[in-house]
Image 1 (cartoon, rainbow over the protein chains, first blue to last red):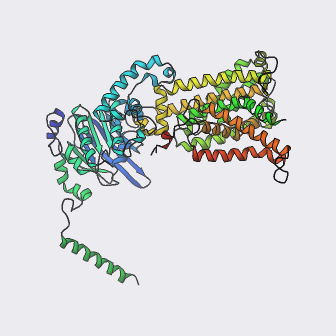
Image 2 (cartoon, rainbow over the protein chains, first blue to last red):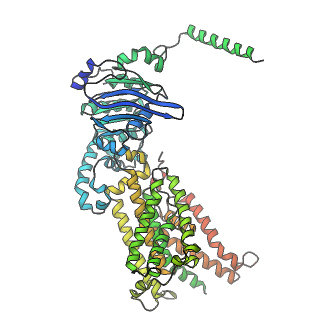
Image 3 (cartoon, rainbow over the protein chains, first blue to last red):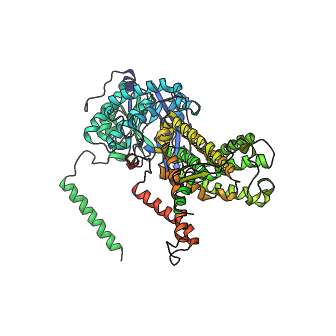
Length: 308
Length: 332
């Protein structure tokens, strides 16, 4: 439920108690370790991360103001973009510069900020597509149904179970394009689970989702952790970050500027300065508004005097 | 020519050799565009490469007919790799640009004066169909008559049609089997959004290459049938060949197994009927010379065809077999 403190039952979560709330701090059991990854677009350095580790079995949030490089960082890690330099490893294996499909097969599956439901496939076909290592996906065996029928039945069973869990089971024969925005988010998450990932990477799962559905999405994300998966997500919605994350990493201007448990990070002065602004938790008082207005008027007047 | 002939000759064309090649070419485009979302504007190149491989292996190098068929498929696969390697990693538009340019380049090269000793320049290749002709079981004209309505094809044309329509049915079966399989599902996923498919662990590049090759092979079959029906020359493989095949695909309905078949039947009936109708109407002075003479009448079919295509795109964009509901879904 929202507002609950994260359960500290699992060893991976308890292990975080000793971890320092400093950028690049070492974790007891990291699933993903990133070193010196940079990516620049022309003169703009979009990502410049020295060192970061993602703890296994917990929910880690990656936050930061617009343009902080969160999605670019995500794209680099998942092979959808290539860095200028850097190494990163998954479960101890170096996976730097590997193509996206290769990383997905290893158990690192992502979703997208703009939902990518495959519109002219049915919901069930979307789900089946998620399953890995299918015999019928190889060209030579594809035409011979008896080669892949058994596996297809098993996959379909798994798909139905997941659709039921995500409350999409009545839509299984509908085209994915006919789903609402929120349902597409659910479908994308369910489809990612078909690949049986170890690390689920969600890029803004709450973007464009209505409040009611938000609660159920939060529940689903937590259930991923309960099933033993690691979750890393990019999010703007601070409620969600407070609510479900065990650990928060903050990016600004391409760099990691802070990390730690949600409460600690939200109180960190560097984060407040970079991301939330001085007035993030208080409305402006009438006096303050007047002050700001007066200052603005002064500046305007000064500007008018300067221009002849 | 009587008014009845306008109908019988249109019917002959509807299932005739031309309908066969264009249908096969459109089946290939259906794999490319309808299922995988690849914009291939150079289907005529796949046809030409296969036709010329067969023709030159037999006529120029005196090798066996069957070796020619084999080399033709090899050449088609090679062409698919050459076109796909640089472009399939890029956005869809690049394949369109490269294929249309490559098709013209190949046509110019195979028809060029410097290679005249191998490919016989603009006159094209001939005298290599003997093996196929010897297999022809029909000696006389073949046809049937119902009342006054009689249609006839020469024995050889009917042989081309027999083999051609068998190939079309087999091709449709292959497309059906492929597209109901998980392989087909991946390919359709690529059509919808390749990044999503990539994020699920599929090697999108390899699937696109396979699709380009398979669609090209159907184009190759179209090329063989063209080569066997008449002597292939560079002018048979100009860009309008590709665009006729596209018209057939869109008319029948993309991403439907029998879309190209329906499209080819309707297209060839319609275009022949228009040609014959305006020819007859001007000859009989039904349309007076002050409006149109017989030379102008021969262009009318393309004008009306263009108009019909526009109306089709506006009022029935899914084609004859397509599902409007499916097309109406906004992909992004």
